[in-house]
Length: 152
Image 1 (cartoon, one colour):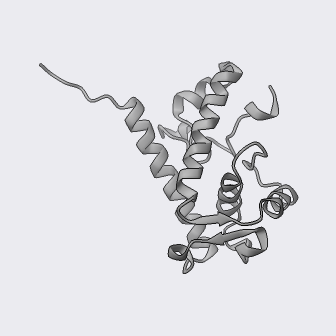
Image 2 (image 1 turned 135 degrees about the horizontal axis):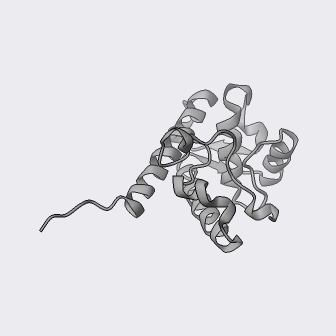
């Protein structure tokens, strides 16, 4: 398996406990179950969906003003889930999600908050990122896989 298609999960998968969407990596339960059987193209399709999700959510909250500084920090801090081939907003999402109160000033990482989010502490922002990504992933799962029963 190449680095690009390495499993995105960051720990114990919450689908093990009955979630339809993993709270860590936001893959769907069937994707986590079948991941090791997927071909690279299938893994890449899942990873592209996850990248798009992070970019859509984070683009409303932050701007990455210095991608090189952000990547250097993610590398130095060994931020799991920060993938060099993803958009820098994804690196920021993982750094914020994993760092919480330990981060300090986001500007030190090359991240600027949008005006609507400037009042948030890093803990509040981390909570917002986790919750927003999970809610969006659940909505995507429902849109793609929850087919209501119809009776004629």
